[in-house]
Amino acid sequence: MSKIAAVVSDVPRQRDRIMSIDAFRGFTVLAMILVIQVAGYTNLPLTMSWFGSPPVSTFKHAGDAINATGVGLTFTDLVAPFFVFIVGLVLPFSRKRRGKEWWNHVGTRTLLLILLGVLYISLILHISYWWGILQAIGVAYFMGAIAMQLSRRWRWLLVFAIAGFHLFMSHTFHWWLHLGDPNASFLTITNLQGDPLRPLTVHCTPWASISYGMITIVGTLLGESVVTRDKTTIVKKSLIIGGVFCIIGYLLHRFHFPDFAMNKDAVSASYALMTSGISAWYFLVFYVVIDVWKINKWAWPLIVFGSNALLGYFLQPVVRIFAYALGFQPYLTGYSGWTGMLVGLIWTAVLWLVVLWCNKHDIYWKI
Image 1 (cartoon, rainbow, N blue to C red):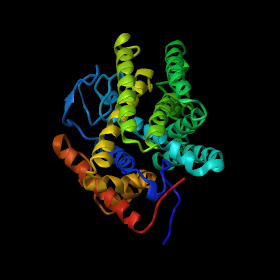
Image 2 (tube, rainbow, N blue to C red):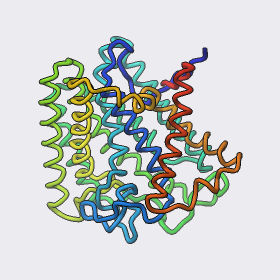
Image 3 (cartoon, rainbow, N blue to C red):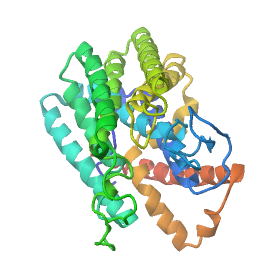
């Protein structure tokens, strides 16, 4: 059987795996596929103001609302933080397993994530480059690895230092969050006259990715407790980390609203802190149910995605190309409301079946 090397996060060997980590990762991949599919649908359910956003469905980004400024926090805005938090969560496992080879692995993985991000966006979206989520994950991963050289106390301080620095730069220098002429077209492979800076701001500017690195560092704080496998310690640390960062993130969000508010487009400090805390609490729910209470059979569908996360990410456009070539495009577009959500779930199930087939045939994609 063939085996392609690739997964966004390091994980323990099969006999050492903690099922709740794979389930949490799988839940994140499932959520990502679902919200990407329904992004173009209208009048989605659960529409209201989320942490100060204009009315918007929680299955869309706060920045997608009409007259949106980016302020707010929906469920969709949690997907990217979940990814980078999990990256930090498993870093202690990776360092423990790889020993002296770990730093070579860190350097190689960082470069590959950034290069894969550029390649993926360039080929799929037909642009020359774009600072997308894979590149941000690469930066966050490297920051988490560097931070692992510090003690826990210094990592706590580092998180707040990065938050303060990002906050200062965001409100002092316009170029920190905004590049290029917002009225100009993008530089693309087919439009070489476009603005070469604008593609660097669609997800976030490269340097604003340090906020994702902040979330990864928080993930390492919990990951060191998870690697001990002491249930009491894991639950305690999850509660503490979740509580501290949720409270501080929310207070910062309200302190100078909307300038300091949670904003995914800017990857603001309050957004990073708040979502770090929420990530810790989400993981705690998975951990208690699956690894403490041993109620785990329900998690198998999530683990299908979670054990092959990067392949699930890259298969989306591939499966879509095949679906459109077979004439299914009319069945995937133009929906609204709960019907749109149903179609999104059906599409997610199709991707799940493809990943399941790959898993059964030992086809994984790991970096």
